[in-house]
Length: 201
Image (cartoon, rainbow, N blue to C red):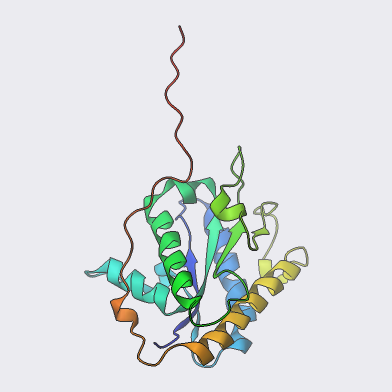
């Protein structure tokens, strides 16, 4: 296995400025602060930049996930509503279970970044054991994340977490491990139970 990406970016695509700018700002900040930690690897895998077209998109996503050190999830209610993002999340959970056999994980591989909170609550997949960071105060007036002192401490925590996994993975990956054999899982069920319809009497 060759490490090719520091982090796989998993997010629901947005059409308008708020979601687009948050994603772009976070991508730029992570590239900026991750760069000193890596040798020749890309800091991030972002599908809009690196996926391209062609056949076997599932295979390309599966390989990119397997060749990434960690995953950053930009959580919004839209994220959990989309089957393809829940599938990426489930795929990284499988990768984490495999790597747990290689070394004592210092933390989970999935790092949720909260852009927009669900009006009810965060799902347990996001709020459960582990670390998530809350950037839900971000607006279009916040400026660049990489220069905003309100967000820099949390960005530093994310970077430190990815860097720790990177060095463990470099030392502990079994010889001959082949990411070409990793396949995407089936689409997982929705994260929230759908209540039965209520009809007034």
